[in-house]
Image 1 (cartoon, rainbow, N blue to C red):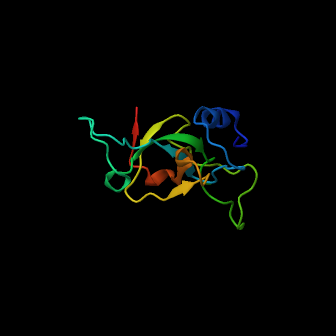
Image 2: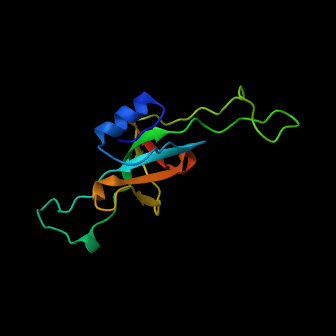
Image 3: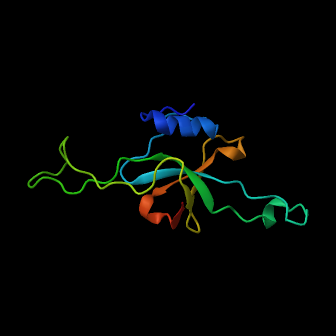
Length: 128
């Protein structure tokens, strides 16, 4: 099971049945579980792998804490009480991924373990 610090995120990942080592997004990054592309057409024709389009729709399964607003003057690192920009996405949101999003395979033998790790700003839309 994925071990991350936020119990809400861990519950969402349990529902998506992804197994991997510790995986937690940092900064303004999100982890998105891609929806599997259909291998048949609406008319019932089975498509070979080469003809299938990759799905650009996914569900957010983990959200980073957000980027820091501003470092205190004279410091190169944020302090413990530094403010962060709020994230627009939350766990469970359905999102539209950009073309060419980098897909990460968490388990070599399991095609259902494909996730996309990207910055929130790269997401094209949230389905509400």
